[in-house]
Image 1 (tube, helix red, strand yellow):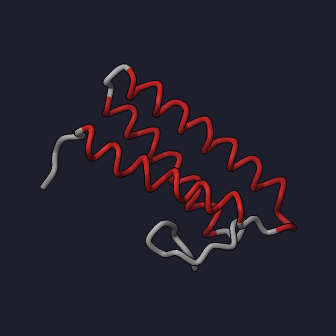
Image 2 (cartoon, rainbow, N blue to C red; image 1 turned 180 degrees about the horizontal axis):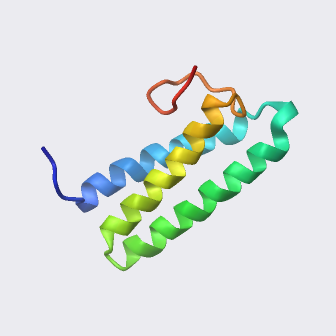
Length: 93
């Protein structure tokens, strides 16, 4: 059981979230573009915050920001805003 947020663990989740972000940006349901843009903006802000905290070596808050970012992506995929099929990166129907 891992009970610490190491630089390696942080990198793993940062890479997963960035990969999901790039996929979601390319898989927007055309009818839900406005909602997608709002979600992607929030994800971008949380990714930026994660970088900020990581630079300060505050891995706990950086990890929290990554989780919020990915949560937004999961919400978009679950609501059909992003037409994604990868159940390892997203919560899908």
